Length: 420
Length: 94
Image (cartoon, rainbow over all chains, first blue to last red; front, side):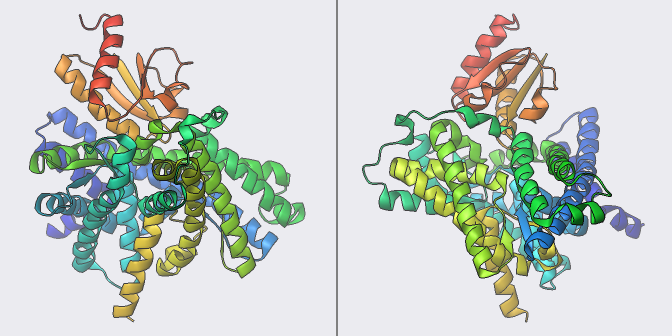
């Protein structure tokens, strides 16, 4: 009997369903709500797996074309794609680390000075997944993996909002709300650059700036567009003969490349739908429980929380971070290293946020240079991160945002040091 | 009655605003279905009221429903005021 229960719980989709079930029961929801929420959560996990298949197949073609065209490995950093891929392997461990990591976050907020509750659930999920992958690559499994991994996740959930808070106070003008997004080190660097060089620079919001690029806020559209350009470049680099013989089964190489780019964006769309379903019940439960146990803690929210405070800095940040990504890519090509391409989501979301942080400390100049350096930083971090990810390090995609890089590189190398 | 909150990827911001809206609605005693989505999906989802921060709301105007544009996703007072006005317009509260 116990074995059957263990077998059922080892299915990650069921495990997250059980977490949602417990969360709903603790909140004393109606029976119908509990059933609905549990089923939707399980479905979310399964939908996410389907999205992974779509996105990863399209990326595989990209990787093949890049290899053929440039002779080195080309990687498109994209959290959703790499996590969806990793969850097929490490789903159970990720679900456990995520659940107990949230518990650890509440305990840390209750008993230490780090009074932050990290509410950006998808990043909690992604960080849990990366921690699981790195521990497993280092040969640590079972209870130690879950216990140490959860504590580590809880620490990151409280620590990163804390280092962003000084600049957050400047941006929002209040101390009530915190910032919760695992690109924080990049934003803190940008704020640092801003305060170094941005003396007397006027705020980005005092200038007129065209808002025509705001349609890029629609993630599916911006992913399809930028990936379209990247696919187009690699299609020409690898040549029609190669593509039509090996990949497209005779379909015209340009048509193939553009359709693959939109297929990738479609895969990401499905993954996001899955993530949304997984989090729909778990995050409100987490928030409700946290508010009861640590009412004085600050909620740490996703990065667009700062966008309305400086819409011009958002666009400047995106553009200059993207330029930083291209500069970083050129350096990697010169060094003959694996090439990290400028992924649109990390530059748009994280670059934009870096722009807002840079503007808060150093105006226009801070927004531009801060985000540019952010763009270079998030291009180099994945190169050092991939070797510690085990099998996942060989994928055509990897984690994109700064904190994943920094936490992963530190954790992976510390583990390597102790467990040769 | 259905309220849809949107943001770029439909993961973080819109979810936080959704939870705030549920809080406001229960204080007002209004029954409504509240959901969150990304921008692309919003166009395919029918709702009576669409909500987004001001950088997003401009793209919700073309949809067939009332639009609430927020300057801040954390300001509960602003949300209460703007949502209240729309609910009054729709005769859902006095």
